[in-house]
Image 1 (cartoon, rainbow, N blue to C red):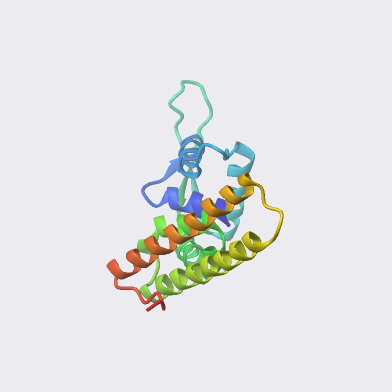
Image 2: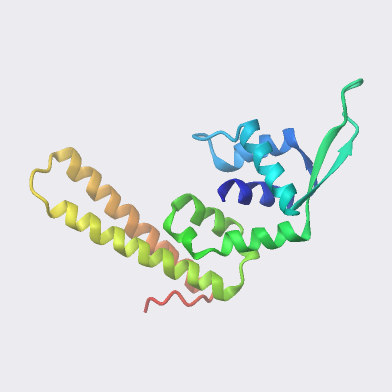
Length: 175
């Protein structure tokens, strides 16, 4: 689902050929993961079969090279993207959640609130889990430092998310 979301999001701006999509996908997903050609073209083929993207031939800028394919998001792809980014299950995965946030403009307000509420519930569950782990015997100074850092990260994300929800007038369900 992340693959489809990334490819469809990159096609929102304008039609693109595979190599440009590959470069932009790598920048979008970050330095620790690559969007290799097999992954890209498998995703594009699947999206084309679903009617989510259309394909046209374009003259290659290299003299004598075969034409290259240019991909365009289709109306079905736009709707698929909206569905993907509004999925409340995205709240359970950090990368998918932040990808949804980056495409916030595609999500209806009620779905935005639901996504934020789900993330807050997940963060609360993580905070409780970290507290349980911290209460177990046998910690080293390093494990204590890790738990403290993780609890702080969760609390910071929770605060930030509540501020964001308030700024955007969303019902985060947390009074």
